[in-house]
Length: 264
Image (cartoon, rainbow, N blue to C red; front, side, top):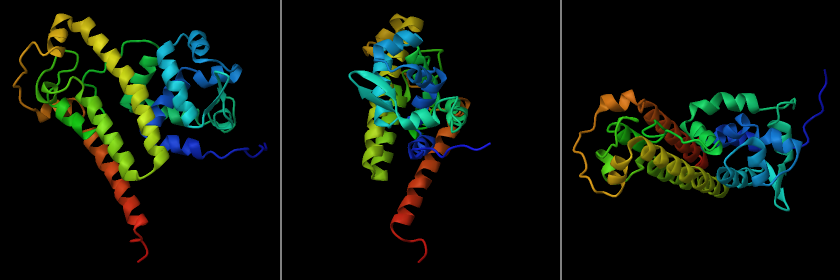
């Protein structure tokens, strides 16, 4: 069997594969048939949300992200697939990357949060393990979905995991010294973390009621519970440390090559 050569470069898809921020949004959209639906007919975010029974607000947030990544284009308010998405993200294409990308999707804690936000479901993300070193501090205190935690970093902020995500994401973007990567990180964080925070707080108020409202308004004293490595490991935060070291290693390799140390 012979196949015609693709008519556009697959570099944006490689960028997705290598990015810890863009890929979960795309894999969630693939799972929910966002690209398949737009292949059928261009649509506004309202039309697409109705067609797929998605959250209109979350759809409105995520479609511009895909446009910024070069996967969609917008004309007169309607989004349509770019050549990159049509070639590499549709199931019927001989160059489909969807299956490979979706193998990595569930491994990211962001994939489920974005999927639930798009579906309009309440994401139970309290204390979920992530990819940030700050998560380890939070995970050493939090008892997932069992209580309103008020010790450790929860003494100072209601969302230490998301704060850690923001700081680490911005830090890696600055260290990478890449304009488009930096803009992509900012767009991703703005598009996903706000929705995740709203979903999480709705879940906590539904589960814990007045106890969470009292904590959020600082009407209860913080807990003095000490950090526990056993609790952090139970929350699988050793994975966060490994992920952070891997990211730092990539940055060191970048510096090594950019400074010309290789080959001297």
